[in-house]
Length: 100
Image 1 (cartoon, rainbow, N blue to C red):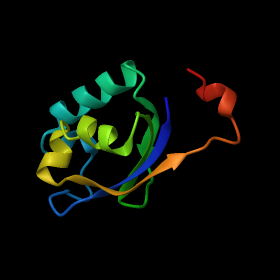
Image 2: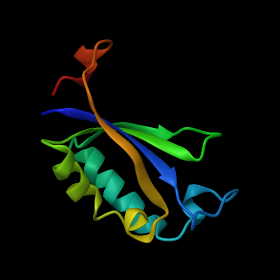
Image 3: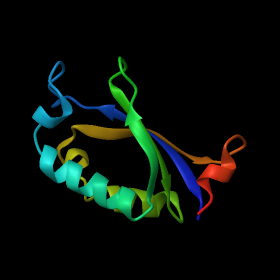
């Protein structure tokens, strides 16, 4: 299945200086991220501190399918996170670790 890199920016509702777990809708966001990781959709992800952003490497058939999957994230729906960009990823280094 194709891989995509997705840069997510924190939106206007983000309370800077507060931990992830203190943000609105944390439980719903965390539950979806855990589910997507367990199912193999999320390959790798994390924050890009000190930038107000996160990077995800994800599997999806198409960008449209990826957007549909993440539309269920309450942080997307509330504007706490939004995609700054999504791009197909063609692994060149470490590709053997991404096989699956």
